[in-house]
Length: 221
View 1: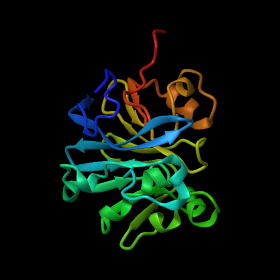
View 2: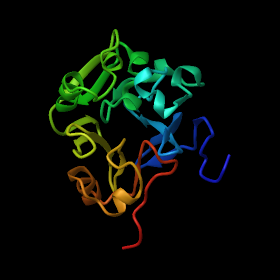
View 3: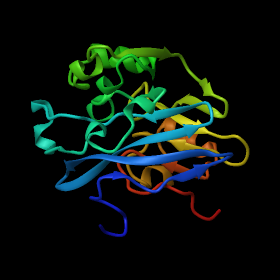
């Protein structure tokens, strides 16, 4: 394993958000993007009132994404307590963020209503059979929602019109789990989209992203 942890499957070091809310990245896949392997992470938020999973990665291959040569380490094949998850959040519904939703059939999966409508109606948006896998139960959200005390869902359009982020804040600077709100650090260093600008305006302590090994942190003021 190199210094960034890339290529090391599974659960990595937990980092703690304010007041004992812990966020743990879990490496679930690698995808080939522009000739380089790009990691795919999901994030577990351990809250005193429940265990929240942000995005679900993917669990199988599909011809539609064969060109990305997916290398899978699905949650179902790791030492991961699927039954211990109480709530699932999809930041958005692209294939590498919702492909494991079927593992949580019967659990509430929170997604912005706009995102769900777009995933079900737009061509070449995602893999629809993964979005509406048997038993998957969505809770459509309109705008901001306090999911648990100190844990908010916040719309952050840009990557998709219905993208949302999870903001953890119980005092002090918040910690954000952002999915693809930014795909690499430069997009937060120099924010352009509505969602990126919104997250920067929160003055977060750090931001977890889906395709980067370490969290983004703001530079010196």
